[in-house]
Image 1 (cartoon, rainbow, N blue to C red):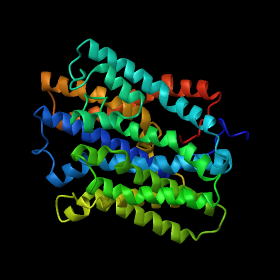
Image 2 (cartoon, rainbow, N blue to C red):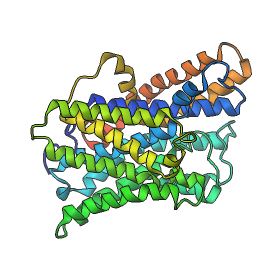
Image 3 (cartoon, rainbow, N blue to C red):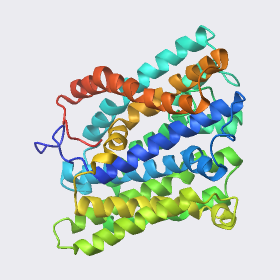
Image 4 (cartoon, helix red, strand yellow):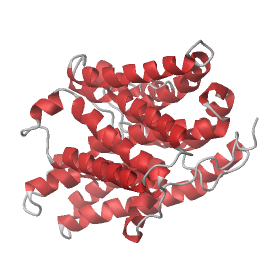
Length: 385
């Protein structure tokens, strides 16, 4: 075992990657707030132009797509540097590190949600299935299947966000095993690349041809795995070129192209002239590719983040904590507004997302980070995953 294999700071923070993560989690928070207020009868139509409202509040799905690409990239790049190559993968170490990062907060969240369900707390009671089955699906990484295939509806707040964790955790389960098996075969590297390429090809098909229903179109394993696979391929290429000279102008150009690609997808809704593009399932892959271009350029040409992006990058560093806790504030904040109905609605749309920051910080400071250090045996303060 190398000195950094278990706990060393194998991957420093990259401002561009944290920025992508921050934009991803903020887009999810804003979408959930918009949906909760909308279904409660509070709309922003008189306050914000429709196109701006779409850009700000309707891109949560795109945010999840971005995060899948980031996750695949960081997990692969970190594994390459931690183990000295994917062929040297140690599954036990990989699983221990992933468990240390994910399990403490996830288990705490499920305990809290169980109590809220059993006490009949408004907005948190499980319907359409049983609490034991919901817990079992969360523990066995198939909550997305439970919602889309068995229930045909979403679980209550804070439960429904776990569909994306089911996808990611399934990736975490198989990633080290595939690495271990593929690289033991002749031409193992090509086998591994073929597997990733297959997922990239199947992603658009899973969103356009194969889905059993509209929910499964967005939340199935295959529909989400192309973004992760693109991130993995980008990390392999980044690591391969890390010590080779690349013209800064080329990296700047890739950064600009990646940012322009992301802006293109998030600005124009797919129900306009982009409808065929969206129906083909290629829009999500294109969005993930834009993120990959930015991550590739960011890692090979690391720069300090701009001061004005610092708050967004903070959200990126605490994206997991904010993701699992933000619905508490959204549900209770919407209920409070419906009850007292005081103050401009826009102020509530600003205050509630901002309050997710202190809640995320407290969760990280007093739960996630201490447990992560304890379970790993040491803590890499600058680690990205």
